[in-house]
Length: 223
Image (cartoon, rainbow, N blue to C red; front, side, top):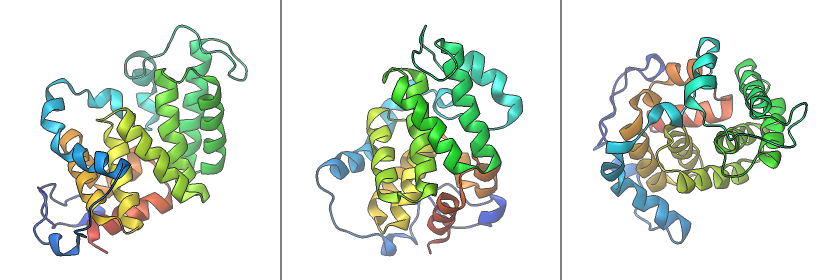
C-alpha cells in the first residue's frame, strides 16, 4: 500500500499505498489481457526472492555504461543484421546509441534506433528485450500512445519484474483513465524499485520524455 504525501518534484513522496486515492479508482473489472495484468499485483511476493532489479532497469548515466556493458545486459554470442556490425558487441553499441539519444532528448531518433535493433536482434535476447521496452517508451513520446501502451503491456506480461515497465504502464494507464490498472501496476513497480516514485530521480536517470513524465506526475499528484 501507498500513502499520498510529500513534495513530488523533490522525490519525497511516500511509497506506501493509498487510502485517499481509493475514491478515485474505478471499480470496473478488466477482461482478457487486463485481467492478467491485474492479477500481477498479487504475485510479487512469489518473485521477490529471485528478483534482479539491476538487470531489469538500466539508468542512463554515462558513468554506468561500463556496468551495463559488463554486467547488466545479457547478450547472445552473435546478433546478426545490425547496421555496421554482426557481433554482439555491435548490437550492444547500437543499443547504447539509442539510450544516448534518449538522454539527449532526441526521442524520434532513439525510437528509430531501438526499432532497428528489435527488428534485427533475436527476439529472446537481452538486447531485444531492453530495446522493445525502449521502443515502446519512446513511441509514447512520438505520438502513437495507444500502440506504445500495448507494447509496454506486452513487456510486463513477457518479463514480470522490470520496474521501469511497470512504472511506465502505471503512468500511461492513469493518463488514459485506467485507474485500477495504474494502481496495480504501481504496486508491482514499488515492490521492485521504490525510486520510481521520485520524479526527479526518474528524470535524471531514465530521461523519460515530457509526455510520460507528465503522466507520472499526474499519477503521483492524483490529477
